[in-house]
Image 1 (cartoon, rainbow, N blue to C red):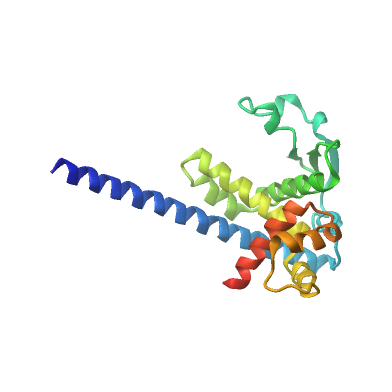
Image 2: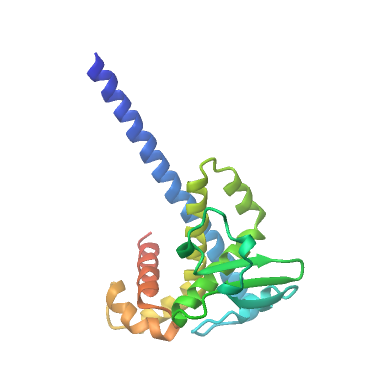
Length: 213
């Protein structure tokens, strides 16, 4: 009898674990696609169509704000989270003022990594202005899960912005291999987009999954 109770508890725990995993994947996919559509709208509105992508389209889209890029070491100490370790704050931050958007990054890191960091921070900026996204994030009771979703979606924003789907499709179409081999293809395409091979590899893996759907 006791073993039966224990077994049911293990099954219930497994079901809850699988449910959380499914919910997490679906939530990430939902918001990745949401911001991917917004990015497509940014490019359509600004007419940008060639890699490598810089941040001019975002400047045009956010025309009501001044944009300032600063070194992470200039970020105000009093605004750093009290429980945040040094290595967690070394990459990037943002401050959204009444008239100015401040984006902070480490100016000493590789250009490709710094570009991704800044695109990631732009992702947080767009999250800030998206009431639907903020409302859904606030409804997540677990702070760790909430933060994980927010950061994963910001990474997806950076990836989609620096490596837009339509440009990835064009780049892949000109390569001799199919189906897409993310590892090999990244070696040929990363430089043209001014991103790291690692970032391109993950983007191509995501692109390949979308093709399969």
